[in-house]
Length: 208
View 1: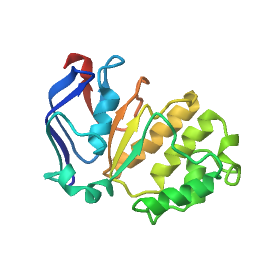
View 2: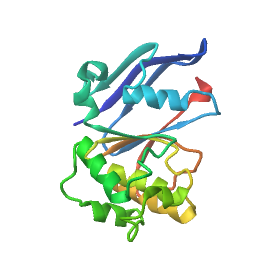
View 3: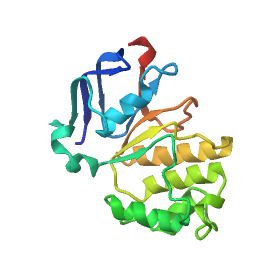
């Protein structure tokens, strides 16, 4: 069973300790929700969890192995969605999904058109991405998660630019990922409204 574990993590930015002694475990079906005021280190922590940034102290373990030792083997299991959508604006949604599927470990049980339909972009397959609204571009970014077989989704404010209906729809997609044994770590200013009995592991970095 895959687990993601942090032991005594510490992070310093601009000579200021953002957090230290941080411990948590994410098991299949669980979501880690990071809370705290602006500047408390939420995005910095997500970058550490992705392996993009080294912690000042502590360890991150995937199935008991150090993620920085695992390297690409660990990155096969994660998908990251940051503040920016990360899509190629000159390409169509279909072309963006083809790239995402080629770069990651692809799911075999969903095709690209189905992924776009699930995020409400049916009919926009061949529209240049730059012509989509901000909310539609965010939906496309979430569709990229759906076409990969990543176990752990790391999400920085995933509901940005979405209206209430869009947020509710994306919550159902995230629920589906967790109900299938997936895991998530996210920051959000939105109050999460999972309908199923999803276990949330909450950490407020302002208290660290």
